Length: 222
Image (cartoon, rainbow, N blue to C red):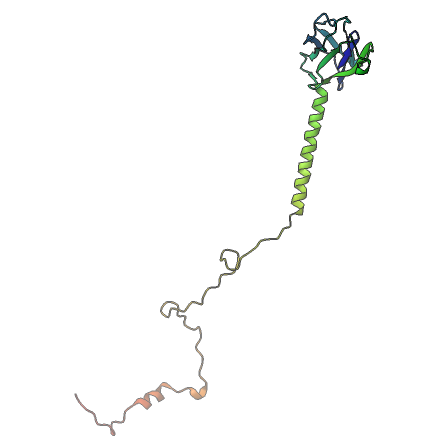
């Protein structure tokens, strides 16, 4: 922020986020290259905000002199001890530059306006930030679940792949036929086949056919 020597530096402080209770902050002015001869030094200014009152203004008057000098600087810093309030890191510190107006060149572009009010310092309530963070996390979780669901649905089930060359893949094992062990595995048929009448002979007939004729053969004694 830049002001011309002899004009006022006006800072507007605004609270963002919904206020449900009163909060406070402090604006501290610190000289850098400037001194109390160049502006009205404010050691600190207490700021208070509540529902319906979200803005406050600080006016710092700079002093006009007859000395030709370089630009001078002072800094305004916001702070708070309230745990429910966070200071905007980008705009919580404002540097104010005082331009000298002695021997001012009209073509230099320096304004001779009596005031400057083009800088806003912001204070953000913690409640507003918490809402944003929780919303972001919720959206991220929903996106992750939706993406995971789509991945599962797009995965084609190709079933169980079996390799016929591998014995353990569910293929029927082909066993060679086992030979009977005649001693241990012989099974006697339950019913013998019957001979027909033409093939049947009596036991006596078989015996007679085996009987030797004593008259024809000579008995030999050993």
